[in-house]
Length: 322
Ligand SMILES: *[C@@H]1O[C@H](CO)[C@@H](O)[C@H](O)[C@H]1NC(C)=O
Image 1 (cartoon, rainbow, N blue to C red):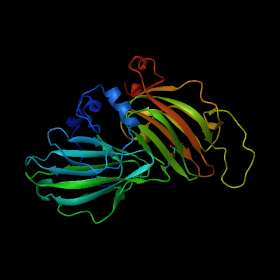
Image 2 (cartoon, protein in one colour):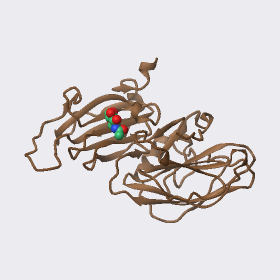
Image 3 (cartoon, rainbow, N blue to C red):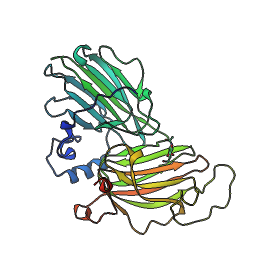
């Protein structure tokens, strides 16, 4: 596996969420909670935007906008920065380098990641392969850069004053979203396997409450129609030898394959769960594991975890490490 341009942990020290760039606003003007909930409700118009990356403030830039971004290096320092792109759950992200004028000397580099990387962890981590990382310096990548899910990353290090690059970000339709990143944990989402084998996940980059509203996992067989029995919610599905299930839990970091599981459920249940799960982890994760024999779906309501509920959360990540 190729080496990543690990962004210095220093960039993320302190409260990341407060320092994120949110569309149409300046830094830290409001509380992060209201900024985040606003973020999740935004319906963007496809208007082209042009934005110049401010090297002072935007080293860790999160953007949900389409448009063109310019970067011009203010110094010869080998600082690593990132453009964290996110789109609606049913979108993919396309990046086109309009120009790259980044000398390869002194470690000058621009890298595309099909996913997000933070503190050495990548998302989505299952099915990682080297095709998901494209590095370049003095020329534009020869390949089309389109992400597999609604999040992607451009990392860059331009240790040459006055040099830089520009990227055009576009959001494309994704007819079969499997892995979905939620930025601002609020809303109702359905996670599906589209009848396929493998794992799909939903990751909210914050602590959250997760309420299962509708469950259809390991029941609707793909070929032939049987009467589908409402089984109710089944817990501990793997212990019962059932192949398809959904894990609800969290992780401290983006790698959801290292998630801590609070509950694991399957079955057919059109009634919502009695109560939501309170997940006090850096990231809230729902992971659907599918054998490929069934059409699986789970509908979930996410909401931010109220601060006062953290101490009696159902799951607190990292307690086992203490
Ligand atoms: C999907 O998840 C299961 C259970 O965690 C794991 O055994 C399997 O290897 C995963 N599949 C892929 C393609 O990552």
